[in-house]
Image (cartoon, rainbow, N blue to C red; front, side, top):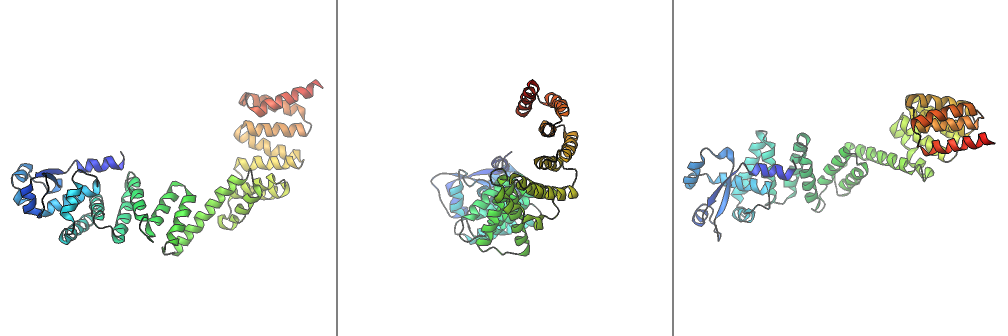
Length: 360
């Protein structure tokens, strides 16, 4: 269920009472060219029949609460314009609904409080109201995930207000939860830029997001621009501490730059932190093969292959056997690779290569 359907379900529990022109003028001192329907909350209804037959006995507050509720649940409701006309300019109605909202919060009826508060925001579009709306919808979202869509809509509305920082903070928190760290950093920077208080917690959050963004960006750049990748990754060693994956990606960057000794140095650090990561073991084999130390390369690659039975690692191992002149073990592992994935392009290339060698 999406939030729109959820609110529609909420509205379906209201009782709508038809009110004619005469009753409207008597109760609210307004007139409309046609009869309208006024909402009543089901919790205020004791006997539907009595209500319909005793309009004069219905407390006006019941109608006020119902109208604000409808405006909060669906601002485009058929009679929304009429409800706004009834409410507009009457400070007593505003004070009354604020009291009802406070009562709902006290009774932990947060959803009803939020819907009424949202209804109030259609009449009183102030930063004070948005402060409360944002805090309330964020709390509801933590226990009801369909409110995420609602919160994002409220934040977008709030962001349209000039020099209002708070919505950017909450949007940053949501983006961080989603794993979109680049956008989370963008919004937290906007929060501070628009005058949001930069507490120690906010500063820590900014630095954390900046580090993650640089880490992800560094990984992306490894293939095409390893030098720029290392500029982003190496400074993170102080921030990330003993992080085997970071050392691994730094090593990959140095290998891409053909600085194999430095790559091996960082891979040793990575293995000292966590020797169970197969990618590090495989990378160590690739680097030793690159400097011609095939004995060590084969030892690392065999260990990685035994752990994964990966065709990619198997082909790395075959190439090491070939480069070291060990055709027998190369052919033996080629047969293993064929069984794992006979259609692998590298496997096919190696097979054709070995066939050419044997024909000579």
